[in-house]
Image (cartoon, rainbow, N blue to C red; front, top):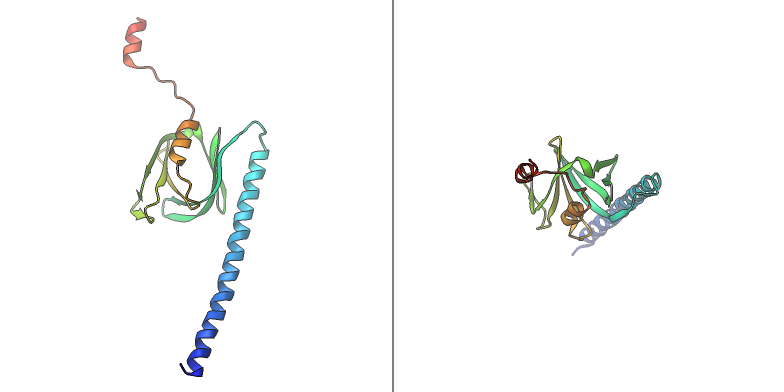
Length: 156
């Protein structure tokens, strides 16, 4: 290689190094902000117990796909990205999982798919690789009072 090509390659490598250092610093700061937000949110109610998380995740809601911090308490599913959001466990109608969600396949990772009672559908993938989120959410959900038709007939 000539000295010009070597200079260009080293220059590109230096620019890439600086760029990725800045991106990594920003990502770590955002993660820290999200975890601080989670701690502040949990401090509001000392009776609320953290059941799972926090973990880094990707969230897909509508056409929005972004990073978030995901946590499950005994009362709600919290996800912190740019905005601090939550889904109360009482508002969840179904919990599912699949490797496909809204036409996306992310390297074989399972999506945690939450459907709320008003029909909204939100998908999460754990970046940290800890599976078991669908079962954890199902176990945390309050049992719904449902009476079967047979038990109504027996009561008469």
